[in-house]
Length: 157
Image 1 (tube, rainbow, N blue to C red):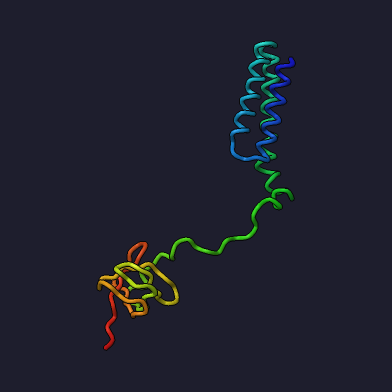
Image 2 (spheres, rainbow, N blue to C red; image 1 turned 45 degrees about the horizontal axis):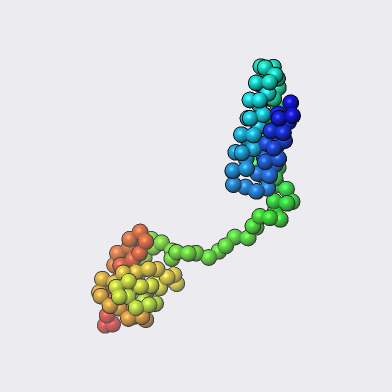
């Protein structure tokens, strides 16, 4: 009986710790400990004792899952430990769309043959079909691809 209680106590402790320290490993080990307690109960007390231990293990697991996924995210503790602000920055330049086709802009960096162009107030990664284009030179969008635009140099009249 002592081994069953110890296995259940370890399982409950690890499941409770899993709520605080996420990652899954503690929950898996806690579940295996509860399973071990159930198997020992079946071995020592037969089918009726094992069934009671199985019911207790399922109840403990259900309560732990309910606490972790339903109650804890709504608690004051979770709100204090969670991020509430949204990062507004981008790690990649915006994806160009077909509305840019034929529009003019200016080369922000030297295009040799790739660089950055600004068109309608937004910056895009661009590829020059005209070869080297100096920074500050006017460009026109010739082709729009998924992640970049192909530009040509606009010659002054």
